[in-house]
Image (cartoon, rainbow, N blue to C red; front, side, top):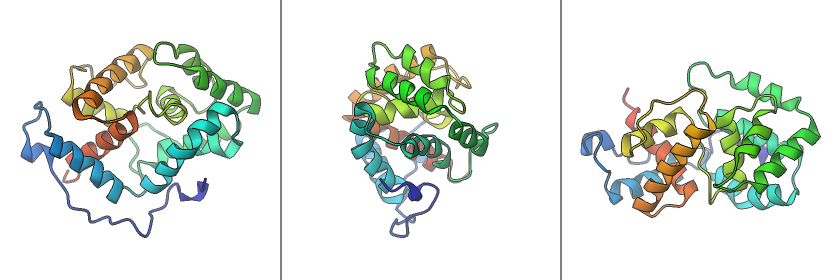
Length: 222
């Protein structure tokens, strides 16, 4: 896959896509309509600069990671992607460059063992995968969730403060974002994501795109 796309805006992306505003159209705490969710997904695909390279990654990385047919740059890409999707607007306290530099020094065999653990992970048992991944330099649970999501995009959803914020608004997930989340907190988040995915007929990766876009639009005018 093309690893040079992370951190750049695609020239062909229409950044002036028509916006929708969930807070203006719907009272906070109410369930968004299916139309709102569909619009968020369409808006992500048309306006998010990293959508094209993400779509390629979701298509090619899962099988490569599960089969062990990947290179060091593929795992480095996941770590870079997690931070660079913020396009320079990282949450407070996040040092993207330090994390990326730390991961570059990770032991190759330790990385492969951690990815293998992620490949063996299931929603009923992924503690070992999280432990192996977070033992790597530069990887905390949110970044580990990105590894799980790219290994099993049909099972896991990336977590971070933005995604958690939206999920907590739309579901029974009431706790504020724990920084970083524990495995138990991530499990509660995934259960809430399941509820949203079932409610709106989304797969986990589509749900991630919707969560990201809802947050982006919600805070666009702030």
